[in-house]
Image (tube, rainbow, N blue to C red; front, side, top):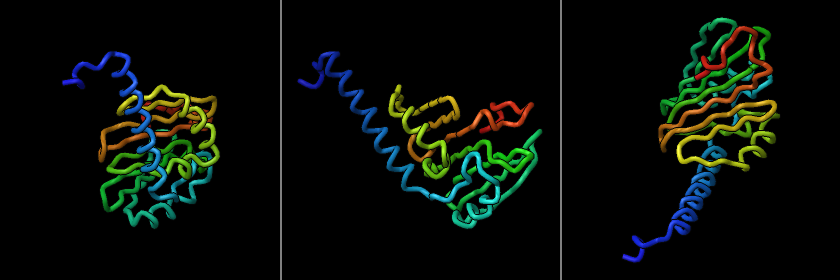
Length: 165
């Protein structure tokens, strides 16, 4: 009965604690997944290595002004690596029961992302972090995670970032 009588101040503190705990759990999940992903801003040569490490199947298809290499892992997780005509990975998107290791995925952009992400705001099933150089969105309930990371300065001319999913 006492739990039903929590003041708004206590309820707010509990919800902030829950968000902080969720962020810590999500960070540990992200850091535990495969570390060999195509790094943003680097050459697309790593895509085959990614496929091998995931034991996944790869399909490559052409978009308008870019190519997409989609890797499907045995657990159903898909990772799409978006490659500009010059061979540079300018965006990555994922969907599945687990998320990729963001420190590996974001490469040289990870520190900037990490520093901005800890500033909040925090949401239960969605996060959007935008810095001067990178945009990262993540979300979904447990076992149905999705996300995307884009380096806007590397997006080829004429490509709408909304197509990156």
